[in-house]
Length: 383
Image (cartoon, rainbow, N blue to C red; front, side):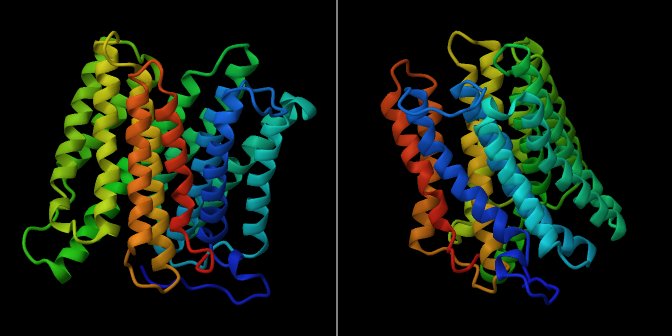
């Protein structure tokens, strides 16, 4: 990752590139939202939101934390794809303000009403999707327009979330749709960057077997993944969903095995990407078994394998690597960073196990405590 080109200006450094404000804000918010979540669950604190506590938790992780990190990644990657200068300065500040306004609107929605909350909350994703589409189109980087599809699906899911809540029920379809969009981003973008970074490291420091190049098998397995996710979104309990999910679990395990991650264990920044992606086939296996044997496997286990495991671990790994690479630091994870990686992985494992245990308060508390340490991977002076 080369140090990015920026346009000279009077704005502070934090507004010079998309990853700076959005990785920082997203990581801090993701940690604080989990710290707030357990007291909220137990009725010790309250929001002024029209959302029930569990719905507020789901919404803010899926439509608060995830979009912030995705935005930081896209605004950093798109200039590399197009050769254009990055979105920075006032436009970047306005995007950040829109994101913050959404968090405030959802938290205090009982004071401002559903209509205002829906408009404010969805304005951010709409603005990011529009900005990214314009940058890619002006840069004539047509092949990367497909990356925006999951972003538009995430926006649709956010709108549907508001609709489901207003209809008087707890959202079910929209959270699954949001998770599916994030998992597809991991499958598509992860399938691009994980073998690439692994190949680069192995070619320099551990010659021998290299990651299998992208080919028709990858295209077929990505299509299978999309089909399994669509089936899960609309028919989570259908036995056909179970079969498709187990097939997607096997397919993504095959892709992961072909990336030679076992040979890159000496580099934590590379190896953690493989470990994070491993939660994708695990999530598919759990949702597949939940559809086929609901008496043995709870559906929420797969949800958190995707959410805390795949999404949480992968976003952390990408934030760490991009922050180091785009600020001119060596791509090396120190002991503290490795401990943070381990903490988030263990947080995911505890949250998945908690789904199988009726009285799981200690596991929930442990998972939340481990998750809140994820911001320590970011050196604030680097941001």
